[in-house]
Length: 137
Image (cartoon, rainbow, N blue to C red):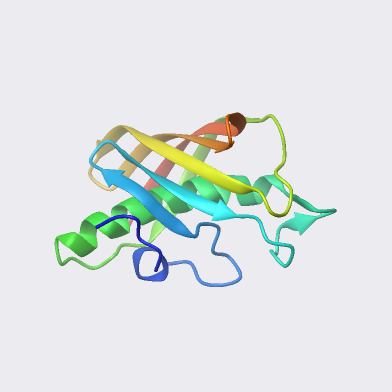
């Protein structure tokens, strides 16, 4: 069934805050998405996608995973909140036109709290990594 190109039913975010285009992989252990950086993006400054968008991209990848799983189980898609971001490393900022490939892995999930690790790449180059705690309601 993947890739999912109609991302809006899977995530609670709406324009101009949508930071993923396509869910490319999803399972119990994690998920992957793609996102093309466009010039009109709210977080593009001086032709570069800024750091807050990278954090949001990782969070939305996790949200899309949860949304996809809930949709396949005929459950409502929950709203999630970033509880903490740890060990954020931004090695480079992507420029307009680049395609981001984001992967999240589930490290721990207890009730409505999920700890993930996330990585954003363009080609073979790693742009950013972090750990994130996400709460769903």
